[in-house]
Image 1 (cartoon, rainbow, N blue to C red):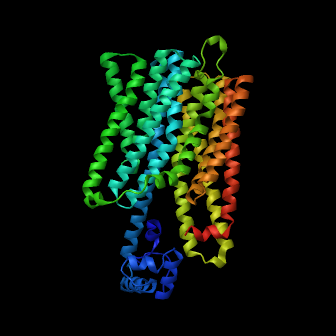
Image 2 (cartoon, one colour):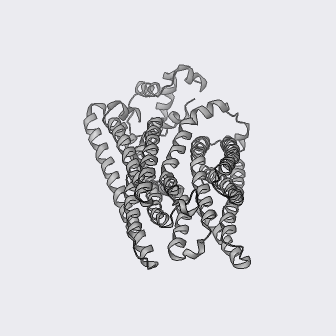
Image 3 (spheres, rainbow, N blue to C red):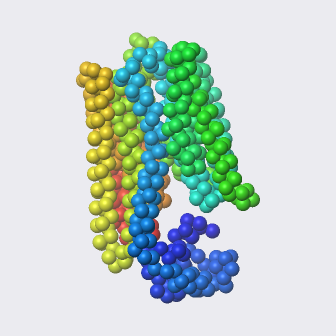
Length: 510
C-alpha cells in the first residue's frame, strides 16, 4: 500500500479542496491510484462505499471558529520553526567541527601543528571518510525516515542498523585496500598509514551514527556530541598533555562512543512508545537496496565533488618536499572559510527547498488546471526569490567570516589567500544554488539526473583543478571547484526550468 498517498487524503477535512459530493471524492481517491481491491482491504465493497463513508465524516466536521484559526496560525508558525530547525541541524552537524578547526587555524595555529606527514594522512582520511560514507548516510536517512514516518520504529532501527553494518563492512574493506595501496605507492610511512586507517574508520562510523540520530528525530544531539568530545579532548590535553596527534585521533573516537550511546537510547525510547511495531515484518533486503541505490550514488558523487579540489590541491605539493600528498596550509585556511559559509548556507537551502516544494504542492491543489500559466509564473517567481535569498545569505556569511577571522588573528592578507577565498567563494556560491535545484529534482523522482550532473561536475572539477594547480599554483585548484559548480548549476537549472514549465509536473506533485 502507498502510505505516502494515503497521508495526502484529506480525511480530516482540513484540505484546501472543497468536496461537494461523494462521487467527487471517489474520483479523487481513484486518481491517487486506489482501486476496489484497495477498498476491500479496508472493509468496504468498493471505492464508492469508501467515498460515502469519508464524505459523511466531512459533513459532520464542524467549521472552525476564529479562535481555532488563530491557534492554527500559531501551529503553522511552530511547525515551520520545527521544520527549519530540523533542516538546519543536519548541516550544522558538519559545520560545527569545521568552525572549531577554522577558529584554531586562525586564532591558535600552534594548537594544530603536526608534522606534514601526519597532517596529510589525517586530511586524506577525513576526505575519504566523507566521500565513502556519503551514499550510506543518504540511504540511512531515506529509509529510516520512511519507517519512522509510518510509526514503525523497530523497522526503522533494524533497517538503519542493517545499512550501517553494510557501510561498516565496506569501510573495513576499503581500509585494507587503502593501506595496501598506500604501502605499495609509498604514499605515507607505515605508522602514518595506521593512524589514517584508525581515523578513517572512526569517522565513517561517526557520520553514519549521526545519520541514524537525525532519523530518530534527535539530530540536535549531534552538535552536543561534537562539543562534548572536544571538551573532553581539551580536558585530556590539560591533564595528560598526550600531544596533538593523539588528540586528533581521540576526539573522533570519543564522538563515536557518545553517538552510539545516543542511538541505543533513542531506539529503546522509540520502541517503548510503539510496542506494537515489534511484530512488523521487514521488507526484502534486495528491494530496499535497489530502491535506495540512486541515493547512494548521489551521496557519493556529491561528497566527491565537495572535496575534489582538495584532492587536486593535495597532489600539487612540490616534489622537493618529499611528500606524496599534503594540502597547503594557506589553501586550507582560505577554503575552510568558504566551506564553512557553504555548510551554513546549505542549511538555509534545505529549508527553502522544503518550503518551495510545500508551496508547489499547495498551489497545485488550489489553482485549477486551466490557470496553468498563472501557476508557472508564481512558481518561477518563488524559485527566483529563493535563489536571491541563498546568494545574499552566502555573500553575507562568507564576508562576515573572513572579516572576523582576519581581524581577530591580525592576518596579513596574502595574495594567494585572497585568491583562494574569492575563487572558492564563487565556487561554493554556485554549488549552494545548484543544491536547491538538486533537492527539487530529488523530490520529484529525478535524482538520477541530479547524480549525472554532479558526476560530470566531479570530472570537470578534478580535470581543471589538477591542471591549473600544477601549472599556476595550488590556489588555482579552486578554479576546478568553480568550473565544476558552474557546470552542475547549469545542467540542474535547465532541468528544473523544464520541470517548472511542464504542466504535468504541476499537478502530479499535488
